[in-house]
Length: 609
Picture 1 (tube, rainbow, N blue to C red):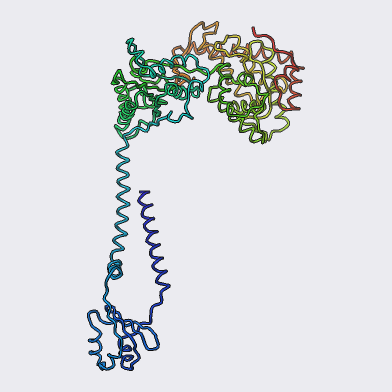
Picture 2 (cartoon, one colour; picture 1 turned 135 degrees about the vertical axis):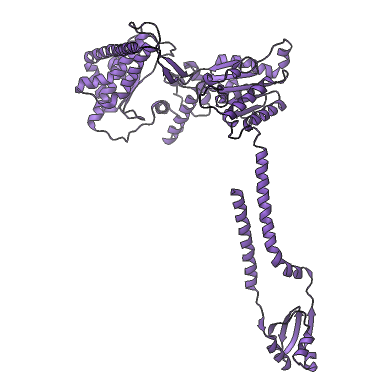
């Protein structure tokens, strides 16, 4: 309808333009005065007429004084008959120069036909554009079942290889076999080896699954077809299956190649599980994918790669041998990998000579590759905002905090009392964290609001950890409760600023009991059957597998763990009151304290046991 309206408006504008042109020409032309037949006869009788030019029913009369007039006569009536009917004497008519002109040629045809033909021409042009739009819609309808897969790696400049992917050494080793197979399949086929037809990349969002797939295609030097799982499914039944067939048809024509399906969980969910609702079209599309992967010619060098961060919801038929039987896990990078990733993303950015990417890697535990790329981008934006030419450590540290907590809110209006309470609250966190041996060292304290936080204490581990002890969790709970306890100790009352800390401390205590089996009273077992989203770490639902009596014991144990954490934190706050006041005074003076200044005030942190 939009195209039809557009074409109609174009035709209307053209018609108006033609009308304006014709009217402008007619406005410039000067038509002779029109007179009646009776007056013309009188002029002939008075011998005033010099010449008469007859053009059909129109007569152009020229008088002796060169004045021109137009006279209309009946169609089919000759001039001589006109003179005879009005009784003009022959002697007077013979004195007039009479010129008879026939209507012929293009001017006659246009003059007589164009007034009737022009409306039909306009209608015809309108119908033509309308039919053309309908034909375009029909052709699009015929293309509806074709896949929208995009082919990459045609341009050598944008080619991605394993050099552009830092870390994930094990994943590279697994995928190097795929690269070797695509380069030299005969080497494997001669030995009777069968390279997996499907490779499933698993990992948290931002760990580089798509980048790794492009690197495999770049290393192998083969075409790379990229499509999202959501692009298969439409509301029309059969379209998704048709697109799958078209995709694999293209892949076989371009063999050897790689077909990469991003977010395959959009179409590959478990059939009949009810998770996410039943969708016949999605199931038909999944069935077609399964058939196509099974129906491959064993000599066809097409490898299907897919990526997801939700392997728990995939249909088992996708994961069986012969389909996605090779699963490659991409974890979040460790400190060495983070440094390597930062070096790759920093290549096109002007870093200052004093920038130490190792320190940035130390401050970014848990960051994915995408987070690190975003960090450097934020640092570049901050540098441009300050009208500097090179990126300094200051901008990089600020970008870390902005990525983790949000932008600074210096314009937030707070009272002097609230500012002081925030300083004591954050000083309490930092003090307890410093004097407990199994907690992470404090890197920064600030009472400048960021995001939703009124202030923050930044603690970062000195090395990456994969396992944690009960002592570490209990001391972390003491740190979380330290802000609440400091407010209570100084002001004999508490504020709502500790709400998030209390919630996190309670959740930690519950996990110690129900998930980690660290309760002496309840013993080494778990409580509750939880269904979690793998890699995302979020619980979908929990089913109780314990009685109400056990539930009461769990609540009592949570209170015990919290009481132990409170006791330990309270002892440090009371024993180190002078150190607490030093931190508060410095915070109120300069709003932020970095690690070096903090350790000058309190000394070095005790060794971790």
